[in-house]
Image (cartoon, rainbow, N blue to C red; front, side):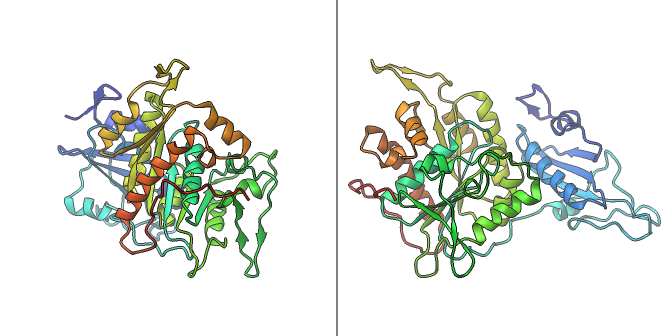
Length: 403
């Protein structure tokens, strides 16, 4: 019997149902001795998209539970009232019982063949986006951890080295990149091909929904609109061309593991992801869910960056206000490297508020993100199977003049 350490209860059908909120569409759960979990989802023929979303979210939540080694989800459906088989969102095993097709009953065990059919397998190769060599997603499964600060300063660090860098603000509901780059009043133009031309700031080519909407208006957008906005800013923008592509596009994602994150993970040829967290337990619990989502969607994770790691007083004494060692423990647990730790420093916050990334300054704090960017460059080069320009860091590089 496996044990879910977080809930302090045996890993069972009851604990899994509780983790999913005991939905009425969950019609069966089996737990194998080796930690494989199979769930059966009763699909709604009238809303197969919702059923597919339920499948993805359930797999992510279950995979985050201690003791689970693999999750398989099977969609089943009753016959439609007109007699024709109900449409399926994906290929599923057929269960024959009498003259009609019926849903798998609660507690039924599936054969190894059925489970292999249910396994989604590797994500098919996605075509590259023209004009972009690499894509790095900066993510956090929890808000307020400094993810945007990391994304902006990494972009600045790469731009400082003379690379062509793009920064896409995919945080639809809370775009902060315009503030942090000092481009609140910017308005993207379109070129002769009708594509958006990214705003150039501090050597960084950037787009944000904040450039296109009223900053005082609430963003009340549902999933399909969010997906469309992100894909348009990716595909309908003049990021680069075959002769002069971006060396790297950094995507600042919204917190959580919702529609925006799944869109990026499933529909965008992401090279790798970077996870940002703070040391306290409440943030680390969400990191595990975020890592599970990327693992499920076959996106490599370069490592973890811990922010707000400590505060250093004028006497040089460190105070771990947000906890100590949490990022390293989570990195070890997930088998990932802890790429860097960023302390609580007033200059970093002030630089973000003023629209001048601290990495481009002449202060002692400017090297913090450069060190992390160097490790990311090594990780991206190691993952790359083709040969775009190698990312090389020069410690003596001069800052790029603000634009």
